Image: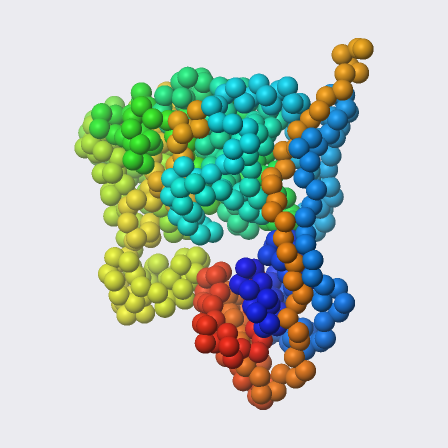
Length: 478
Length: 94
């Protein structure tokens, strides 16, 4: 939309075609870009292209030629009121106020919370927000800015730049974030983690990806008693739950993200209820770095990593008992699959799950594994996480013919007009039997998180790890 | 005063929105004939291939120009092209 706005402001008439359910999003973005009356035509999701085109052409050309209406000729300033105090009343009245909903029409057709995530919130009274602010040395009116240079999906940002929250590119102060930390149920000692998450701008999912979650690494995880053990992605731990929730309340309030208006995941996922956990640094095998060290921070520095989940969790692919049989004595189905029948471990159990990794979707993976399974990989021979990433990446190689059958590759190769990264050649020059990696141009997209309980399980998720650009210092916000 | 009747000031969690200067749309064209109209293609080939074909076939007097990418970020007009562009159709994306 910035491009369309630029053209209209330069005197070049435009018309935009997008899928019919995106209308509200187009309108909202057009207003944000200063051209609220952009002419928009809806395309069908289901009609065959030629039929859709027959219906589109006449109004499309009319949109370029029909004289402007009075409203379309208007200029002005859009400046919504932004009071610091949003509500004044009793706590009961405030609870009703903060639980307000707005009806969101098709494709949602249900009410959506105006300030919350659907659950009741802790009312952000001045007193409570003031107490939350004791959790940081930063002043309430300080704008949330980048603490390091960032490569963002919506452009690069320099250290010191104000963080634009997704999707509306609004900004925030420390006090705004404290308000949301209160609403989420956080304690003041959690607040530096919430501020570090705020520095991410709280990106939201696209129409098809499924959600976000965060993982804390470094000493603060223990300081605030986060759960990195059994059930780390589940319920029950106040720090995990409320910090995870704060991400989504920031997206809603600081980013202006409204499900069904400008946040359009067709199915979405439980991740958008807010999910946070900590990695188990004590469970890392010798030589395996934590998420903090992997991202250039020191072991005693605390960070938070923000993950986008492209396709949900790929659940446990083996029975824990079968896993133990594999490693203890080489018995059972896993041992048969790996060809190690009767041979005690350590075995590379990743061989059991890798064959289906790229069955449906290309791209790197994030793998969560319990400490015992990480230890087995170490004993097998992977002395670093990087060695595992390299191995996984090599397993992803397949022929160009196979690779062409994925769905996203038309987009990522720009219709096969782009350059294949490992060969440096144009995609169209490569023969069908040429081997290319399904996991991306290099191994760095993979991520391993060690945590969880004693039962031998691992879960995997698709989605590129954001690397250092999606890792935020918590210490910078203490 | 009972605790339940105590009045509290509650803070606003909504992000800070910079005021936006809003602009009128560009004046529309009196005719498309002889004009440089750019067709900026972003995705959905089922629609855009048929659309490009139909536009060129049914409106031969328009000087159609095409900018094409399979991604969601449009191929932008160059500064030179901006000087001669009379209109632009963006499809299917915004």
